[in-house]
Length: 541
Image (tube, rainbow, N blue to C red; front, side):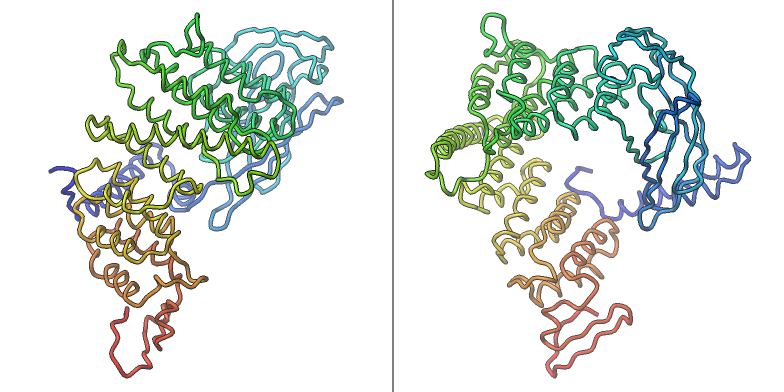
């Protein structure tokens, strides 16, 4: 059976099989452990949501202990977490784990320290792997033996944790902690406090090949926010130059760093960083909100000197990431370019960027017609880039371009991208023809993913809501959605749930306004409908 001929009944069968397997797993766990796991099942399987913890600590010098304060936030519809949790405290003499009991929303725990107080600029520390390293504590409180603290480091529970620590502590944790999860947590926390010291710490992570590649990629993403924020505050000069110079040092030739080396994707970590850095660099903004001129020259060199002749792997995903980076360079169209000299320069820069982006997108989109890439990844990026140009006001909105890619014959991911773009255009233009086109596609297409994407895209970009009037809000639309939901999709729970979500987004749980105007009143609680008109109307029952 091909992917374009998916039986709707198979989805229901898969759901039943998953439920049966889950019940068998619960029964096996209860039999092997010889314990009653009813409470565990009710909290982690039958209930929704996860507990959220916020931790802060204070060092008590007189008692030589850490006073940990743990707050638990319980969102609506979730249960309070009760159980044991591991806290790891990194000290100079090593990493020490403590087990605490969480039984309330606000708990305070005393954790003893094992290291002795010594005042010195450089001290030796034993990390979690047992390795002894020498660290510089001049920028921190050197007379405190606690370096950093982690809550549930082994991820024994499904939870969300926020730890309040100084930025110098996060920088030290990023540099000396060997756990990639802890390093990513430190990087995310440093993104909230942009400063030159944070910028330097993240640049060191990008330049060091000893870090896990996912950590380096996350550092590049956070560094984009740090550079943009620092550029606004004026604390850094040439905000894009350090990242561009680092990229050229890693992937450029020795003679001319702006010329990219021949592609070699044998190193997986270097390949993923190569894909991520152009997008991160292109997302940097100058203080006036525009894309710096050096980024445009950097992107032009990447497209000009990209060569895959000696590479045994395809570079389609790399080219796709470059097109995504071009789209990230696009900013909204300037409305008053002649106000200042800087504004006029920004408009000139913007025109050059838009022209170059449009040339590259058109060239690659036409090339895809002759030589399609794997899974049409380049075409997908081109469609997204064209939609960005339309949203920013640089191109007129043309739904016909995306409608052509919605029909069968294209790869399914490309069709899904075109459907999502078209749904966004429908919300913007309020075109009934395009809306009916997507609904008819959801009713007649043989691919289950395409039908599911139509309803999810319309729910993500609703053409209207109950609070606002729209010409698309008609009785025929209500009748089509309701009848299809209660009868047309009775054998497919996934499609039916997606359509119910769309209906709830458009009309909520009350009577649709268009039906109320013709005298029909629907009460979902009573499950009845009353009509005050003499003429019959096809209404949802």
